[in-house]
Length: 455
Image (cartoon, rainbow, N blue to C red):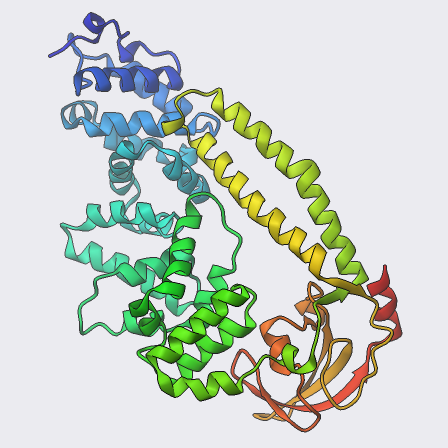
């Protein structure tokens, strides 16, 4: 056995803080490939240190890393009875009491320590806990849990069932969707095909604001949507008429793709399935038929300007300072703070470009010049009747950025707004939830709402 003191590394069993324990363990492991000490380590003070620091969130990353390093050395782990000891202190351990903290730490741990940390968690907290937190993590970490379960058919199937259950409950993220696409399911399994063919679900999760490691699956799904023929076939259930039309409607109505991307996707779908050409050609956007220019209320336009100014004056400078601070923490290849700050910088850059384009192209209006006739236009209240049960509901159709679903105020460029826009009294419309309504009545905006939109 190698003595760490002969390598000019202080013995890790003499550490006085969790950060010191983590540092000495890391250096010993890097130098020797083992952390066994000679003479044998005094484990009582190490256990006491782990117990004392378990409740502290401020040092939780070092705590988890130290435990993972010890876990990697099977000989030492068995000597310490570490797993049994951790089960005793688990009720007080911050990292296991707060799933969101566990997820954040797993994303920050050095990659070589994640597997032993997950193995420790499996032993201490059980499979259900590990699965539940894994499904909240970026997709790159899912495979580690799956690998831990690979020798146990029952656990592996349980993991799959939990993912599928999330789809059944419509509680999925881009990471769920990407996992489902990569999942090598048996040919007899229908869940993969069924849940991949969900255009509305895909577009909804692609529209979420994400950051850090969670962006990877979202970006890959977007790339697949636009360029991968096999993914496009799966998304339409190999050209199913209803599902294909759903995808076309999403491409046109959901604010996600720019004009070039939208056109390219529609062309590819028509190339795959020529029978869709007539639907694509006959489904011209209502904005074009009404000859609308981008506009929003004066109130929303002012909020847009404030958002852009705050981005320029506050968020971007704060991010620049965060990058500067993170650079001072050393090796950038293992510096998670620097990587997160740089990713945030790219995100802020994209957002700034988007906001600047909106400020430059969207026109503010007060809707006072709108004259309501027999056609649904921005600046009117439309009452619809549901054909299934004859109950009615009123929607206020407003400009871009004016969406307030809780008050039934609908921006004309949202999926619901696009379904109603340009429809005439007496015509039917199919809403995004596939319910059919008839346009029953059109009215001007009430005076109190007009006043508020000017503020």
